[in-house]
Length: 173
View 1 (cartoon, rainbow, N blue to C red):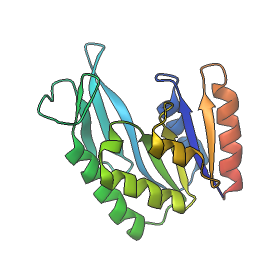
View 2: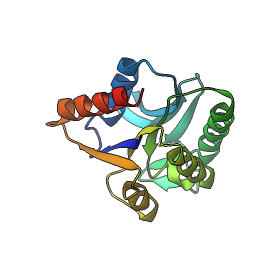
View 3: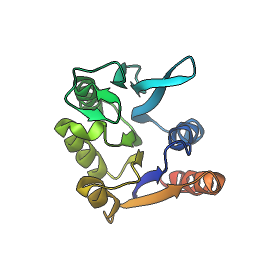
View 4: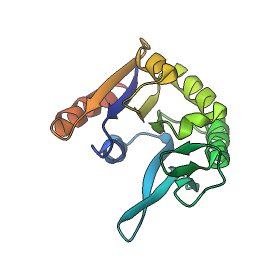
């Protein structure tokens, strides 16, 4: 079995694809997805939501006190750490076929706890996730792992990438 990661430009549908695959695969999963927070159709931030129901703000334009920033967003590093703590406990107590990590990105990578969680999760060879397109040393090393397949998603190849990943997931029964 290999880890499966999806990369691509923003707004190509990486999170939507992950959620669609999770819905189709009928496997036990744990992990999280990130979603946009929109107010009057304007993106104001991002939330981080676990499959067990924990929902926290990941970043917000209104969070000016954070020393962790990506563009105009202040990152709630303490919320990233809360999610990691919950998932670390669940990974020991709960049987799961896949660990969903959406996303290994700039905001999440401010947390050293998150980095540790990602590396331990990848070692299980059960990760289905997304990873930022533009690399830093950490993400480059992940993409170069022999136990990891990386799919570059575009709007044009979305259906073929989905089909390929669904077939891989079926093999990992």
